[in-house]
Length: 84
Image (cartoon, rainbow, N blue to C red; front, side):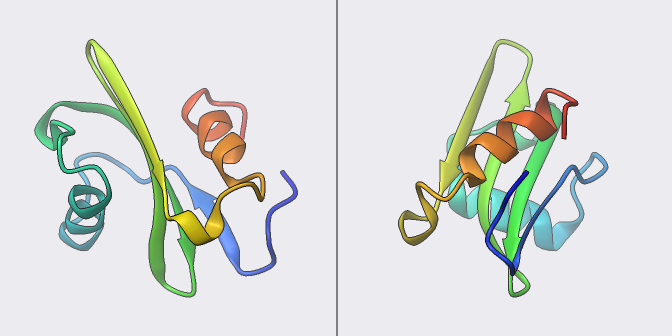
């Protein structure tokens, strides 16, 4: 994955820690956070800027607009798929 220097993508353990849960809820308010099977988060400078969340029967990805088209969307998808 070739990401911007200050961005990292991680697959946190579930259930999400309170701060990560709050960030995921802010980015993906319609996601059923209590039913997550997998999550990948993009973090820049200590702030969560993107999320790819998967639950039984659905998934969603969101990335803050200023970070789009930099390979982060693909990296989130790869981490969720177990390739990253």
